[in-house]
Amino acid sequence: MSELVIKQTHALIQAGEIAEAEANLAVIAEQEGDHALVAVLDEMAPKDVLAVMREFDASKESVINLLVSPEQFVQAILLERQYGEPLEKYVPRLRNTMNAVMHRTGPSCAEVLECLAEHDEGVRLLADYFIDHYDSLLALAFHGVFEQEIDAEKAFAPKSAITWDAERVDELDQGLEIGDAVEMVRVRMSRSEVADSDWMETAWVLRHEFQDTFELLVIEIQDRLQRAAEAARLPAEAEPGVPRLEEDDEESAI
Image (cartoon, rainbow, N blue to C red; front, side, top):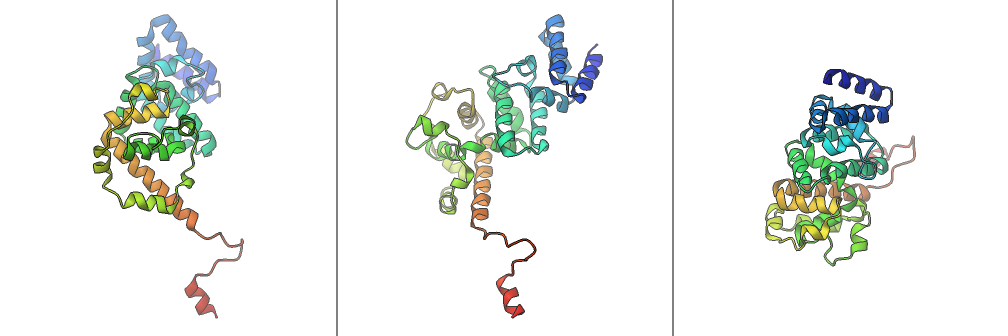
């Protein structure tokens, strides 16, 4: 039975009938119970699970997002980076899809983060998830709050990595070792204060329950900011067809 459903669902996904594929799976839960659908999802290819989940989020609930296991969800969501979408499409989709599963129940966030921590790509995926809020994550790491002076409107406003200039990145590099710095800082917020079922709550759980992963995330964020700062300092590209000469080349060409 489950093998037939999996084949039918795969065929519908291949045909682009994602809503039909989701409905096909939902029938299992209606007729045989949630446990039967969980078993089917565990046998499905992660790519097919992701294809269905990409069409649904917290505002457009699906029984798949409500029942997929943390392990199967992580196997699927890690494939999201392979689609190569522009950031303006990729980041909102990633965050909405992750939020729909991570914040479906109180314990779900920790369960998903635990599974992500077991994968090499997990930290990079988290860095993508938080990409609009790097300065808030670093403030949490080194000051214990999302903003050194709490400003709710500012805290929720998207921020660009480019706003971090080389001087600010250098200041971080000259500070304490990241692990020591994070360990010495006491978080000054309770989970209830940041319970947005979004990036703030995710960051709080990550900081409190997965400190090693949080420290790796801070390192990844700093590396990205450093690369962004270096790229911002690069000179403008030469006109097409006119290769830019280095100083040594100019001297030898004279």
